Image 1: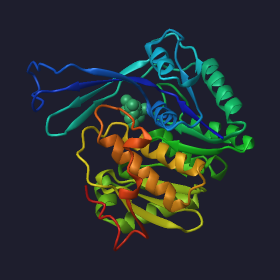
Image 2: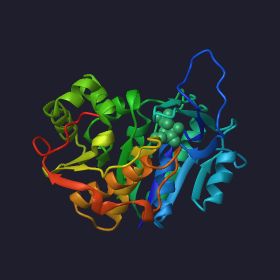
Image 3: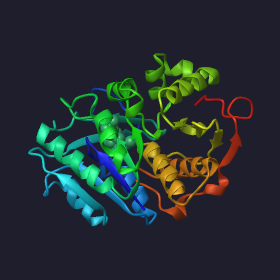
Image 4: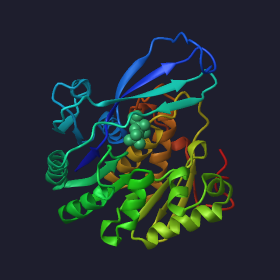
Length: 325
Ligand SMILES: O=P(O)(O)OC[C@@]1(O)O[C@H](CO)[C@@H](O)[C@@H]1O
């Protein structure tokens, strides 16, 4: 069975490697820079496709946009809705000590006809798919409850729905009612804090506060919550009351850009294989760690993913990650 991703706001990701610490107001001589097709759903698709699974990427882009050519070269199956503007460019500034700064453009607005075309493509490919993943920010002017509308539109197809978004679209989705609640939500600690109306520092410092916020998501109808914790791994909480946490193997971090997207891909791939909750979490953390060990927004191949090195434990408090990173 296949996976469908929607990237409402795709990007060309340009990675600029600084020779030293960023000095505002100065001229920096860069190492040769690289550009990769990106946006959260695109990254999920790239990782899923690299594992040999069937995936369709839905995105707004003109046929001759460089992102389309780049994704075609990777052999990805695309369903595009044409837009009259180039896809945005997002910049990643990397410093030698591993500090990464993202500068994301707003993206091209989507008119109503384009939104309808994208929604129709998602619904068409969802029929018969195992998962639909709705990923990333919404371009300027998009109704904030668009993801809620899409969840309701996809539901009758029987495909499971994963959402990975942030800020206002995330809040709107959770406020839209249980019929718009996804099967899987993949927040990071910053996004969980946004949902809980608290600060990331509090969520990170207090596992009880994090678990309380996750419980609220289940109350609102979300079946599974994959909370990514950066260097501390992730936790998976299911509506059936299963709770596991997992720590990644020791890695040298080269770029965290796209690590969350690869975690989602790892979860979906394990689910396609019929994996248990612990298996899905292990795969998510292994994929996230493998991605973070690669430069820019490169996605790992299965050979670069070390599942057995991930330590999965039941529960969260006590033996679980400290949430500090
Ligand atoms: O602006 P958004 O949609 O929130 O995030 C876009 C983005 O930062 O997410 C991916 C990494 O997760 C990158 O490929 C891309 O540049």
